[in-house]
Length: 92
Image (cartoon, rainbow, N blue to C red):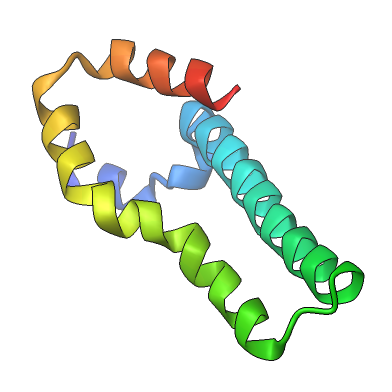
């Protein structure tokens, strides 16, 4: 394959990439919407203070911060396909 053919290819034309990216974008939007719903629930229903509302995103990010390095080591050592399936089952 020469350089002119490689320059004309786009990731947006790759069907597998677009399917994976669409699924990721949908899941990310769902996570954002969930976090927003939690803040609205806590703010309006429980009349929480602004400090408590500010701590909600911190508490959502805290497990990733604390366990991210360990998860990276596990992901490097285990079979990726089995790990993805296990994580999807645990998420469901």
